[in-house]
Image (tube, rainbow, N blue to C red; front, side, top):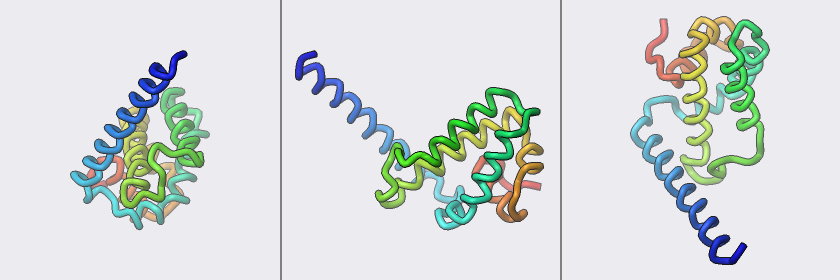
Length: 138
């Protein structure tokens, strides 16, 4: 492999990474009302328990459980798409990925599965459902 090929590959990865950062930054600016950062961090222990409980629920489809397992691995991994030391966007990528996976899980498994397995308060559940894009829950 020549150095030009290697430089081109590294350059391509950097361009894709920069585009991803711009998209995440734009999403975070367009949707600031989703969930405040302090609320999201406060919910993290309950969210991890919810993900573990949903993952253990054999009544959910394999595709849903695979998504949940991949999300748990991503959240617990020290490697991140965007380093957390970057202001705002560092944690925004985690929140956006959680929101996308929760939306997908709720679309496939139903809101009732999340309600059934939620270990925290009803206010916390409302924030989780709002994060998943369900608006005002019942």
